Image 1: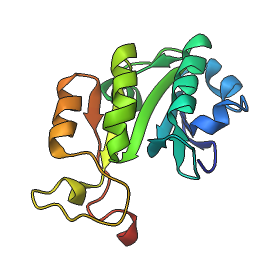
Image 2 (image 1 turned 90 degrees about the horizontal axis):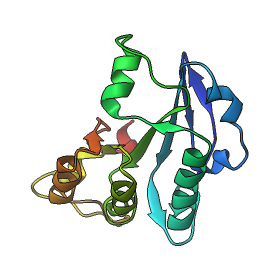
Image 3 (image 1 turned 45 degrees about the vertical axis):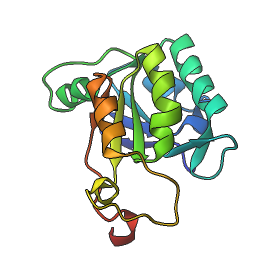
Length: 166
């Protein structure tokens, strides 16, 4: 994971690797802010844009032990729109791009802990005629439906073509 924190008004965003450095602890422990912790892909060995399953679990454990509270996308939107507050230490968990490891590795962990997740899939990967690319496997439309049906996963907008046209 590259980078750690950027601030937009009352929103803080970070990546799991930064939690080990305690760089957000003081920033969100008080006040009404939301830390957005996001990941792209989970695998056995972490890389520049990946996190290991072990580190993923440890990140969730660390946040929960420290008293952070995972919120849903609806709670986050209500906060951003000024309709309600969020609890101190609010965290929104997000997964970018729509890699299959979100379904096969992250989702079972989140489901067991009843932690909400927002996924931002690249929509061309969900098209009826899927264009396979020499890249990491993506979750299928059926896997996405199953995650959403759990009540724990919401879907946000990414792009259709991915990062190549951004």
